[in-house]
Length: 191
Image 1 (tube, rainbow, N blue to C red):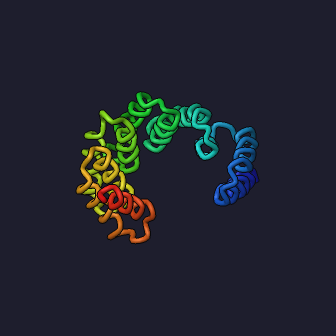
Image 2: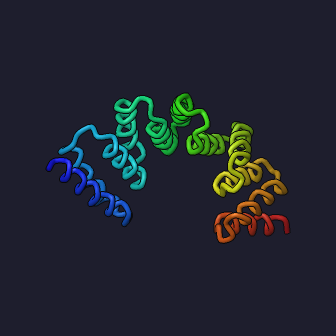
Image 3: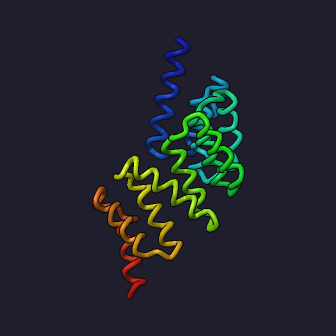
């Protein structure tokens, strides 16, 4: 009976999350956490809610608790790294991503997040480019990696390479508004 109650609670919360009702999701998750304490799935969803409500600082202890409960979970460390990154704590974000990669060295999302972290630091653009190039070699149609690589090239002043990346995004995702806008901006800046 208790298991059915837990499953019903989680289905109700999932429906709120799918609607994007983060405040109601947060409230329901707090009640669920009180009833079913220390459940990684609940704590992770609570952290996600805080991120979506632009409160990444509040997400940090939630994701940190999940890493304590699941000390070998690459996803738990990746989520904690995201929270640190959104707070602007780049040093802790980097060390947390690198710790995640100790468990699964080629974890695609963690590598992509690490590249995004480096992209945000002008002196680490080269590191971002290396990671993104490696990710694209393993998944040539990944639009996010291609777009971010284009952003890196553009920030580094290489408009030709940036344009090629944005065009490759559009080969795989013809309606990608970010790539279309970036190409349009490159054309206008060239004129």
